[in-house]
Structures are given as C-alpha cells and as structure tokens.
Length: 81
Length: 227
Image (cartoon, rainbow over all chains, first blue to last red):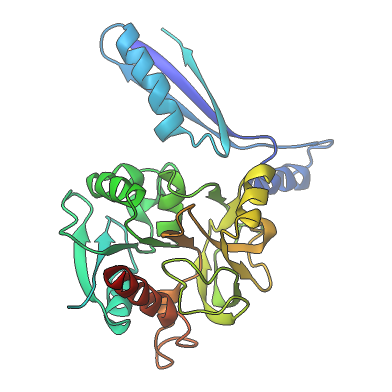
C-alpha cells in the first residue's frame, strides 16, 4: 500500500474569505495575536501495491488538473509510505 | 431553419430548463444534451447552465469540466463553437481553461440572490451582438462563489482586448475590476455570473433584458450562415 498526501492551498495573493472568518472566530474565542488564517484542503490517497513511476507521474499531473486549480491554488505531493 | 442550441444538463444543474426556455424565446430550437454523452448532435451553439454540478464538490465546476460531454464541448469551442456559460457554467468554462481566471467564494461569504444592475462592456461577442456597449441591464444574480479573480496581467489583458463583457454596477461579491462576464480571444465563448435566462419575461423576471443574449446568438449564427 502506498499513501500519497496532496495539500492544496489558495495562493497567498488570493483572498481567502473562509480563512478570514475563521481568524475572526479564533479571536472571538479568546486566542490572542492571530495574524492570519489560511484554509486549505488535504487529500489522502491510498494506492494498492507500491507506487510505480507511471502512477506517480499521472498522479502528479492530475494533482494540478483536478485536485488543484493552479490559477488560484498551490499544491504539493508527499509520498508517506 | 432555426438555429439549434444545445443546453447541457449535469447532475446538479438547476437552471437548464430556464436556459432551454430562454433559447426558445430567443428564436432558436433548444436541444437538451446529457453530460454523460459525447455527441453534440450537430448543435450550432451550447449553453452551460447554472446550478451546482456534482454538488460543487472539490471546486465549483471542477468535476463537470471532466464530464464526457465537456470533452466534446472543449474541442468544438476551440474550433469556434459559441458557448455561453452562466454562473456554474462560467465556473466550468474557467476550470476547463476556455476562459482565464477563476471564481472564488464571495468576499462577504454570503450567498447572494437579488436583481443586479450590470453594464454591457463588449457588444461584439457571439452572445452580446444585439446589445450596445454601455447599455445597463438588470438581471438576477444568485451565487455563493461568484468572485472573479485572475492575476493582474490577465486582468490588464482582458481590459486591453475589450474582453470584459459585462461589469457590475455595484459590485455584489468582490469580483476584481467589477467583472461580471468575460469572453475568449475569438469572442465566441462567454462566461457570465448573473443569470440572463431568468430575465426573459417581465412576468417572471425583473426585466426581459436577459433575452438579448439569446437573440444575439441567433443574430450571430444567421450572420455566419449569410457570410
């Protein structure tokens, strides 16, 4: 079994209204000094068998085509096992 | 013979019936198309309707963009097939790369649903030919993720090439440069966030201003045949 984790975050220059709302809530709940909150997505993908080069290449491509929209989002892949 | 305009239904489309009705009111024949098919049935143009295709999962329009019918639409659009994407349809066009930029969560986080004043900026696209540039219209806007964003270079390019089709008068959602709609390089593909198909008859909408999008495409297609 291979596990790949894809993390997707809005690019720094893109306004993140959800993150801003979460920052407000954290502050209201007593957390001081919250400078910024950015909200993102985490995909945990389990593959049967080991991660071969073909599947890794395809997954890398699909991460930028399906999982993330590179117009507004940055993404990274991490092979965990 | 009347122009034949396809209206695609995705799982979660809401406004496909209104779009088909608007196509008919504009003087064309509406051809209902199904997302899982790949045959465009020889239509002369396509409307991607509003709604919540695939539940807006992942990102609005991100999964619909890979629907089998969208493969056919993307290929045909690159060859000049006129496409109008309304609301979720606009999101699908951006996701598919037929239009630049993206649509993100409204800056105030609220879903908005109201009549909206919009100024037509480009009257030379396939879908706005019957308008006059500068004309102000009122059509409904209803979205939660309608904030148009693109990098500065893209925004400058859209402006310089007169590809901003419509601008909000009173920005409802934080869209950059008040953008309500844009077009592609060949001016055949148009994406618009507010809903012309809900404003084709004063009986059921705020105005009949939206009908002009649907008469415009008939005008455009007739001119193509005549040319």
